Image 1 (cartoon, rainbow, N blue to C red):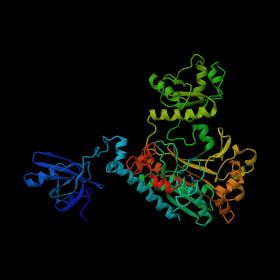
Image 2 (image 1 turned 90 degrees about the horizontal axis):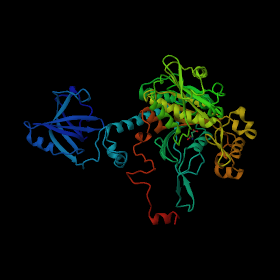
Image 3 (image 1 turned 180 degrees about the vertical axis):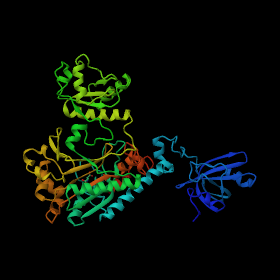
Image 4 (image 1 turned 30 degrees about the horizontal axis):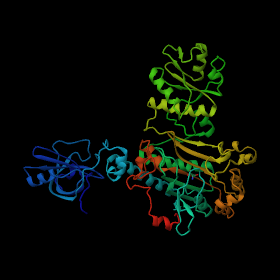
Length: 578
Ligand code: ASP
């Protein structure tokens, strides 16, 4: 080895040892006749010191070294006269006797500090330098730990990891496929998997019983902070199980990860039906770190001559605790927030419960204090609370109120990244109707089983069918989702028919799966977790990019390697593209 120790491990007990360290020159300075270099590697930083009076030659040599030079040093560990209790190695320094420059470095384009001066694009272009920053390195260490403890748990539960192919056939899972032209089969295309869904089901038919894979998936969607065109799933499937078995098994996985990565314990995860989530929070992934459950004022706020409420399909309120002191400006900000084009509310009504219990609303013209008391009662509002109200058609108002609820919580500092609130959302509808294309879509995917008691509704009322499908939500973020699958050929064909596939189309696209169901398919179900999102939640960040070594930017580009890019005419010709 070119070193005896890392830059993170020397302590007072090592004083007087002769050591060899390797690392990057993080920082250097000199105070008169003493020079210092902070030498950095993956494990930490060690202070090197150079005394002009002890060795002038090496003192002068050290002064000429630039930031990020790669050094090997030999020296003796010594107790520091002024210790730094913020650094694990802060009790010691190394008196350097010999320096070898292993490689020089240009001045880096940004500082290698937690608070760096480099903007996003610059750091992405030089991601290999960005990855030297402690904060980014720690994120990848966290990710490593999450996958390590995932494998540990699943292995202990008899799951086996199986790799499935990356060059596959297009499968409809809601998103667009990335496709790859085939040279050997001119004019034909592979698709990259949006998930290994059909393969894991086939593995169940093969009898593998408990499968998992930490696997790259690809979806050609519009990008946001929490989306990447390629992302990683912890993909799992089990045979001979019911929904309850899956929820308990994977609750165990998430608990195991939180215990080992964050030393946090949880009680049994709360559960909520999709219907209740929509009714009470206007979202299928409610953030339950705070309350503000929806209150429907339909029965108490109509009939007072306020036409906006009188004509609305619904009137929804939330009670913001201890917010009556919000300033006019804060309230205006919230009103502007809900009126933004993406949210689209026409306005927001509010009512403050003052210190003396009296009520002051923005619609006092229509509602006297008796009428407002009814609002307050419905909302369980106490003094100093603030009631916010939106109205309109049911679906839209719920969605808008969900946005408002999250925004107020942010204003009040209630979205604390150190608090974790896991929640199972269950009983999703099997289908959703696509008005634009006048057809049904599978809400989860077409392999999801309806609840057996709803089989009869398949012909008469597809909208009413509930699925054996579930999502795991933590802090308002969907961390995972899955379902009990169909394992019966006829039922699967019926679902394809409802989704608008002709028998030929279904056979052409999914023949392999439908046929497999005729060779002893066991009852099975599974789930997949978004590893990048799980890591970002554990790491307290909104961006999954921080937890991916080499992420794409928000136009799907890798600005470091400059991809996507054109290919040569020869390549195109070979692929039959020109
Ligand atoms: N394949 C599904 C997905 O990617 C997860 C599952 O049903 O297991 O969302």
